[in-house]
Length: 399
Image (cartoon, rainbow, N blue to C red):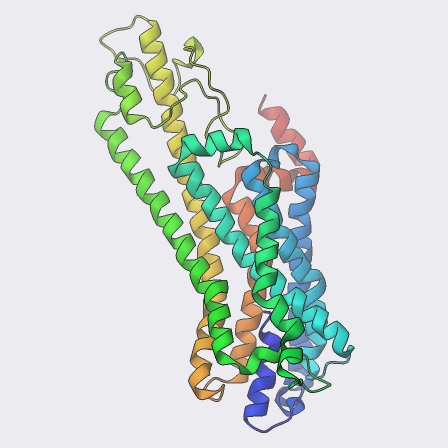
């Protein structure tokens, strides 16, 4: 993505060739170039429209305005900017091999490209960490929401860290070095020739985030499996013994109501038993049909625990899908950066580099489609925007 502007020019210089000889315009026929241009523009439009839909959904649907979902909004903003700014400027440069917009726009484009792509990856880490807390540390997570429910600090921190990783190097590298190594008609970062810098930056940009999200996902799945084994072993067999239910159901607030989103664990701390929840997921034992406060409390608590376990399973599955797509789209380029180091770019074909760059950008276009696939509330919000009549019919039928 952002390094797509750097890899190919360097390969051209390594082979002592001009960039124009390496450009697709010299390698492909006019028909193939037209097809490539169409696909690039199509991907750009899909990225813009898809992420615009996510942002619009947050504006129109208040049900999405939950703390954890704001991190998805932050991701959508970065992906939307990739489609609006980065892709359109790169398409003519990619097809012709010439940068015609001047050095100032080039610097701005490089800063934005690196910033947005890095922020997108960091947002995946933030989303994973938030879901990790909501599943494995439900008590402290819920308490923290009550104290600091505004996610703005975390969202702003993502953008600051993303800028600090590449921004200063893009802006000041040539001043520190004393000269520029980038030709007038090209646009790539000055530090491209420094393989050690790229290795360190790529490690912080992709490999460290990948390790973090893997750690979070593994712990989420282990937590769910442990709760499943503990729940199946006891399985609400003695609802009259509230101490037993308390021991295997990992919720400290048994009167909690259902959350407004998948990541929310409960919304109320009432300790009073609710007799209308007797018919929920757990039934009272056949040996005692009388409804006592102890039975009522235990059965209701068991039902809520099972409901929470099911929600956490959905959280784990949806997060795993998003993280896997992120890894698939980012791994090829990140690995190529390491491979090209010893051979100075001569052992990897330029077309392969170009494909990995666009694969990074494809991740920005896929994310909006993963939201409704993984989250019911996003699906309903999109339906409300795209098919309001159908949404009204489904909503009226649910009452």
